[in-house]
Image (cartoon, rainbow over all chains, first blue to last red; front, side, top):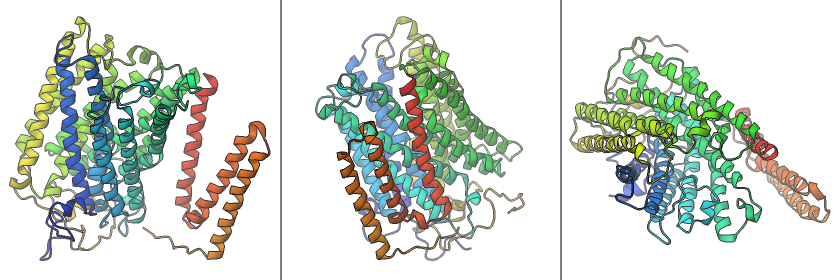
Length: 541
Length: 94
């Protein structure tokens, strides 16, 4: 196999197809360019939502109204949630790194349906823009929270329909991406790449894609039902019209809990790539990681009711959902043991990707353990709808998915752009981010246990200390985010030229030039052994 | 990886499937006249389900695909069945 740059090497960044300039991106069906278009969109929306989050923290620096009134606060936490959940964390890793690296890692030239892939991006942008427009058009920003619970979402006079339609369209984008990945993995693996010779990031994308395809239509139709209830007065959820408000919560969480796994499974996939590379050691328990990914995806479907313990749901349902919530912790814990064991005895190289990956484990475990407190019926009654839930959720999603995303961008940046960033600045940014993150969210556990309700724009004086510490953490976190992003943007064109394999990785993306050529491979590689075989490892069949 | 052989359906086969679907559509209209009482929805859904399976098997080529793909599609039905059952556990015991 010869996939080193030859005379005819043109990177995907320089490749000129039918179109020139911006159109060569907007009309490109190259999976790598589409992945980058998702990346840029996600970064823009992420900073919008992060600054909205900062505005909330500024408001909470002192009791009483400071910089906004209660209704504005309701609108801001709603759009913060809608953008972060539907526009950033659900599509984030799959659409960006999945699009860019899935075909390369399985030895394919592109995804199975390149045009559908581009169409997914346009759907995504349409939904994202509509979500932001909901803040400015019509009757004022939606104030329902990102969960759109009825009966309030059926009655609120604000722009709920805009936000619902935005989430509906974003859902379609997610379904099409998932479908594309499933077909790509089934049909386009390189010769010799059997299922159990496939790297673990594609495995995590595969488990995720099934959730995207199977669970998203449920929330899609549910959101349409709320629109129908608002516009046509059909009684799906309103008891006065013969509906059942708990039915909405069931339908919403049948999607939205598995959606947490849409967010976290690819994140687990990223760190599973990073630990072997920066330990120069095969991943510990390949089979266990594959099976635990599938187990998380499968069991994760049946824990949605743990969001509804205080809703008046039946006793047997609460029992059932609580039990399964504890069960789903097992495959997650298996992964943690595997990651730690992968590092054990390895030649650890503490570069920025590994720093982020290790902090992923730390933060994800805090999020996971506090999740068990919430999954337990008795403690849930006390903690439900408090800031404890906000802290738990952010430890899982930001500490988990967010830090894994940062790990991924630092890991694959040299491959994507063919340049190196500054390790020193990346390390400093990581330190600021890690400190700011914990300062921002950890106090919320404490004031949550003390009884601070979530989604309140004001609070009693006894919560002031925790709120102020948390707000200081928000400023530190934002500073870290800006420094990290500036480092990556600055070195995009000015960084040292990256070699093909700066981290001594062994999966297929490291065997091709940085940045990759237009169709990835000069010759499609033939796979003859399992992944993650480093220099000292004997090949096994 | 192995590629499954592509099955090309004959026009006669597809025409028969079309006729079966049209007949079942007619049947689902006619049974609304028969007043099955509490079973009306059940009967209508049964006919609709048969149509779904015919489309899956013949128009979507599931009949000619590998066992793995058939199992994956079967898994989808099992999943939705379980989701409905779990939801109804709450509804019936609330």
